Length: 113
Ligand code: 5GP
Image (cartoon, rainbow, N blue to C red; front, side, top):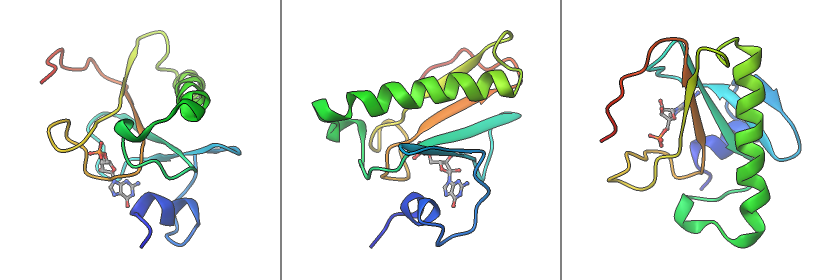
């Protein structure tokens, strides 16, 4: 059974794509924790950071580069933003399809953990 992000990528669940290319999509998070909270999601099904292999290095770099471009488009680049990959339960991961959170639009709490 597909995970929720794979269903969104396959357009089985209607969701506005903020960005799409051959490797990834970007969507607004359904429960934003910041004024800008965008998920950059690879089309390839990779459950967690633990599952990355060497062939995926370009995908991860691509997600970060797309996040940078989206941050600029949302005019949060100069004030700043945060990029987060959660991994497994202790890391707070709830959807087991790799995704990069782009957070910004306010002064984010410095706390990590
Ligand atoms: P995680 O906790 O796995 O790092 O992040 C998963 C994120 O996906 C959460 O911030 C959650 O709000 C978001 N999310 C879960 N289901 C959906 C959905 O159906 N649509 C969208 N747009 N976001 C979702």
